[in-house]
Length: 289
Image (cartoon, rainbow, N blue to C red; front, side, top):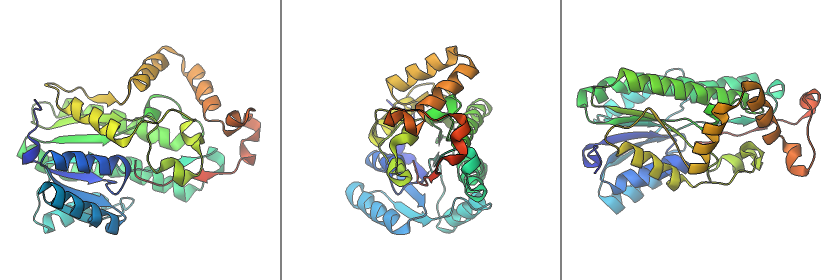
């Protein structure tokens, strides 16, 4: 039995309009949790909120928020308080990635990527954790990625951002022991979301076998149900094995392997040399997980 009483939770989920965020919303609504759904696309959030309220008899509030804002945490906390709600659990799921050689990237887009993927989980954790600790029975799940475990050529900023999320969350896990708030990082691998359709190529996931958002959420909720959840969990047996194998390799070897795996030319039967990086066309993805 879960140590969390889902019927006694008000859970804020970022990036809730699609993918893993929407899957979390549906799974938690089915368990009786009230929800605060946050993303940029208000119409989609409202449709999902209506679906969940009618289907499960819970309360679901939709809030449109630009999570790239430097005041996103404070603004969202103010909006939630203004709606008369008290968040007891938080899932930092929203994020986006870019794919392509770093030297071809738009610096402004990279700044947005860092803001959403790094600054926002910190801001929201800071804004909502005091209320959550006061309630004393909720959880904080920060969505990291398998990219957190290795160097990630052609997604250098995204991988580094997710490595930050993993380290940040594991540190919070240790700091918040005894508060009643369960904390862990969730690391999916390639998942069937909007990410690749937005980026316009499967190279962003190196052609890996896809898991589903429901798979990822099931892994997270099973971890949450443990009597003493650890600071992080990886979705999928093959991903867990990959992380273990990667930990045995040198950083030099891992970086070279990942460079080959993310090479678009590899899928066409050839390879790209580092000297050709500046000639590669940049692709950009922006989506929730």
